[in-house]
Image: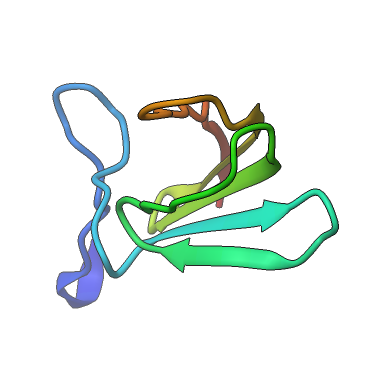
Length: 89
């Protein structure tokens, strides 16, 4: 690779390296209003029963990883996993 660019991909697993420069997480409410945006994690305090959408995009030299998930907030800590798919460049 010329120009000293890095692929931002873990060579052992082939998965992208998530960092504050290549990762974007967006959380929106069911009304479409953006509730939060972050890089490698997002923490919110929301009412129980609120429906949210989480969208994740990770851009590397090798391609773009993207995914989304729908979630209804429950009592306590809600950890939401988002499965990513790769679109090669």
